[in-house]
Amino acid sequence: EIVMTQSPATLSVSPGETATLSCRASENIRINLAWYQLKPGQAPRLLIYAASTRATGVPARFSGSGSGTEFTLTISSLQSEDFAVYYCQQHNKWPPLTFGGGTKVEI
Amino acid sequence: QVQLQESGPGLVKPSETLFLTCDVSGDSIGNGFYWGWIRQPPGKGLEWIVNVHQNGNTYYSPSLKSRVTVSVDTSKNQFSLRLDSVTAADTAVYYCARAPSAGAGLFSFDPWSQGTLVTVSS
Image (cartoon, rainbow over all chains, first blue to last red; front, top):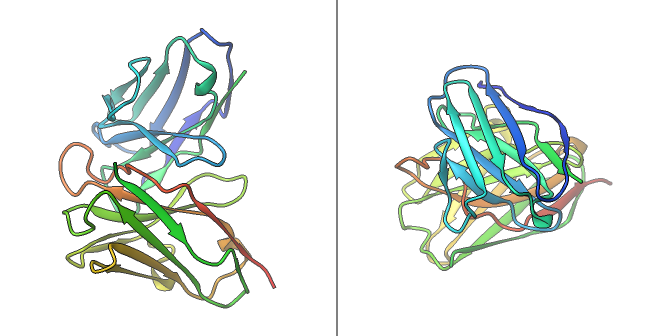
């Protein structure tokens, strides 16, 4: 099983700043990594797949990078609606598909 | 616009069976995608359960495989999850989602349902 580790667990930032979230895989997953945004009471939202491809309708302030075992989600010019929990997920090798433990982006 | 909506009881007794259905609108469930179930226990992270294709191909989480049954009903454009012998550890918000069967986004999930809390308690 591929273990996904996210850091930090909580990230405190101010609106307008840049947030940098990290995700590490326990083995090489090439670029097969997705990022999701979760907010209470809402459907989770796919932000990024294949490490750096934005999903349809995702604002350009969300960007993903990395390959192999190290990945980053960058949120530029944080908006109030961006405060949420973010999860990474490897989609390289299954079963099982695995998620990271999440990073909470808070004010 | 593709939308998914799960339905099922919010309370299940220990040792009984959890049964959820996901209704798909805006897309045909036979349109080549995989359809998945993911859950999130209270205060914890996301856990993938299963992906199923209309052609019968199914991938299970090894930790849940022995208790999970999944089915696709193309006539109703819905798919279902059955989890047997539940315990308190199965208490979670359960989501259904769509996953591409090919391409760069293979087995990423988009869109998701809003989620339903299922509590296992007597």
